[in-house]
Each structure stands twice: as structure tokens, then as C-alpha cells.
Image (tube, rainbow, N blue to C red; front, side, top):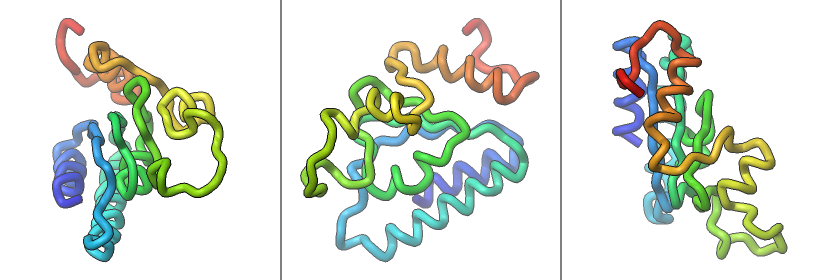
Length: 145
């Protein structure tokens, strides 16, 4: 959480877009209070990015679960996910009810509006440049891409 908060604050200070690539199995139960405070801190830091009207893009990899999903990973202007990624708050074993097939996979979440696009890692740079050029025109991103 501390690194995410620092990155968001630096992006806001420097007037830069923020891209976060999330990969987390969630916080351990013994870190409960600290993890909850970090969730709030990351969201407050993102507020500085939004206040400057700077783009924030989240890339969800496999897995992205727990407090990461419940806080900064799901709050971006644009959310990209890698194919087949496990994404959710609680893992499938922690949910005790019947749920649709693949309900925590990126393709299901795309179909239901939580993810904006599913992008293969090999095309991620190109996709990020396209998104950032759209959200933050007039700024150079990755020349030649």
C-alpha cells in the first residue's frame, strides 16, 4: 500500500498519468488492521491524481484479489485485465454459494462491466499507449508505438 500511495502522489506532483499493474493474492488475516488502513491510504492518494484530472489505468493480472481489488485496482479510469486472470475480493474457496462458471475470470468481468478490456501481455504496451494517448492527449508515450 505504501508503494502505491507514493506512486500516486508522485504522479500527481509531476503531472503524469498513473499506471498500476496489480498482482496480489490479498492481505493475510494477521495483517487485517494495517491492510485496511493501507486500502484507505491508497484511495486517498489516488484522489490527488483525480484532482489534477490525470489518467489512472489499472492492469489486473493473475491473481488480483482481496483488498487490492477492493481498493485501488478497481477504481481506475480504465481497467485492463490479462486473459483468464483470477480477479475478485474473496477467492473461490472463500465463497460458500453457487456462482456462475468463470465468475471471477477477466472475460466474465468484461462481459459484466467491471473490466474495460482483456489484453494479452504481449500487446499490453501498445494498448496502454493507445489508452493514455486518448485520456491524456498531447503527451508523448512510447515513441514509435
